[in-house]
Amino acid sequence: MDKLVIKGGHRISGNITASGSKNTSLPIIAATLLTGNGTFTLHRIPDLKDITTFTQLLRQLGAETAFSGNTLQISSQNVTNVQAPYELVKKMRASIYVLGPMLARFGHARVSLPGGCAFGPRPIDLHLMAMEKLGATITIETGFIDATIPGGKLQGGHIVFPVSSVGATGNALMAAVLAEGTTTISNAAAEPEIETLCKFLIAMGATIKGTGTTELEIKGANSLNAIEFHNVFDRIEAGTLLAAAAITGGDITVNGVDPEQMKAVLKKFVHAGCTVQTTENSITLKSQQKLLPTDVTAKPYPAFPTDMQAQWIALMTQADGTTSITDKVYHERFNHIPELNRLGAHIEIHKNQAIVHGPQLLSGTKVMSTDLRASASLVLAGLVAQGTTEVLRVYHLDRGYEKIEIKLNSLGADISREKYNEF
Ligand code: EPZ
Image 1 (cartoon, rainbow, N blue to C red):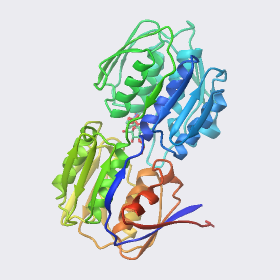
Image 2: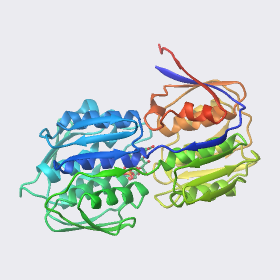
Image 3: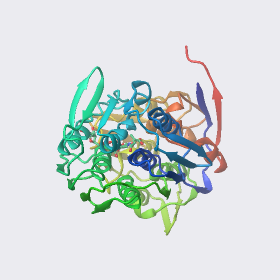
Image 4: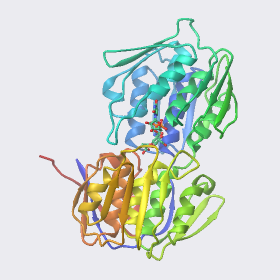
């Protein structure tokens, strides 16, 4: 197993280019199941464990995939198997993304129920509701979701999501593009990942109105085609790199980004005392390290993203005062807090709100990763902690950050990746 050994106290400064978005890659990879017409060429796909897991799943279904230099080629011509097994689904919840496209193309899908998650229940009821609204019959037996279509083909319908859900919106879109007739989706997620999925499906030949908004209308197509596509940047990786400069009093320019998609996060960095300048495709942040307490409430886009909540808590341990951070998306996404407190932070949890008392001098020790963004927050804390911090179980980090220690070391950090055994 790997750990990251971080020597604290180094300023993060310099130029870096963001990787492609993980959370956009996953639905567009799933969407390749929608057609056997040709081979997809997807550029700027990050080399991450979640991507490896997902391409393994697609190969299990019969797709052919080839990945090199962040370009992924996929052909779903020979996909016949419609069963997504537990062994792969348990590794990555987003495997549920195969449900919509498999139903749309084959009229049948069997997907293992995803397991729980480190930060509380991750229900899929909205995914199933959307499929039923389009004419699917869903039964759950022996740990599998078994979806069939008595009428043979999905029918357009009206889907109203009571809660904004990125995944359920993605599945609904990928089912509706081949359904007979028109589908409307109300209270759709408007995250950039969904906006990009809409653009991807339209490029494949789908007819979608309302891209980037919470009201979508999809006219079912008879067939779709494989395309070449350039993935967008990872806004959470970019935000995490900006936080690395902010917490160490550094200065950084992140290239290959769209600042428009990060407005809520950039506003908070400015409020915290950083200077932020943007161009069309870059963000430059300078920090005097004297940070101001800046409250945050994580909500669906375009608000501050829940995937930056853990990183923000780490940053606010260095702010001169008390900060309140509320997560309205995942009420239990606070497993990073006990570990940050072991580094010397003083953070309290009240229901879905963290109260961070700063500034706190952090001192390095061994800390345990529990989930992807929690591990990112521990790395950020290690950058500023005195002495050496060892972040264990970095397989969590490797799910969503491409070569993060190489990137941070190129910006002045002192991080080494080492093997270790757990007893
Ligand atoms: C996506 O997860 C992201 N994952 C998550 O990022 C991100 O935190 C989340 O969206 C919110 O932005 C990927 O894109 C692969 P949701 P998803 O459905 O789709 C409730 C990371 O760190 N809900 O938008 O699973 C749910 O409980 C990961 O990269 C239902 O109630 O999230 C939550 O409160 C972690 N029923 C809210 O909706 C459902 O059927 C938002 O969840 C589905 C969701």
